[in-house]
Image (cartoon, rainbow, N blue to C red):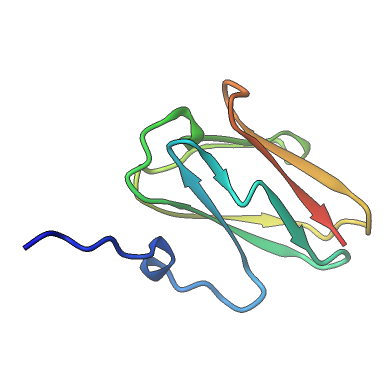
Length: 103
């Protein structure tokens, strides 16, 4: 029988208040993440058969770089930021980008 596509989020337990970013072959979804200001945030980077350069994930403001697994979840701890702060993320080639907005 044909295999049914499952929601990638089902692979990993995400705690309440955690933020999920789907890392896909054609970019990052959602491209803009709104998170609460003044609180530490756990960002869950979820891949599911991702083979593009989107796996080469960078958050320059945090000096964070990781080559993500093709399928799985990597957690990034982001320290509390002031309201109005915007933190960009990108792949190593700069083809795929997004941002985290602290509200």
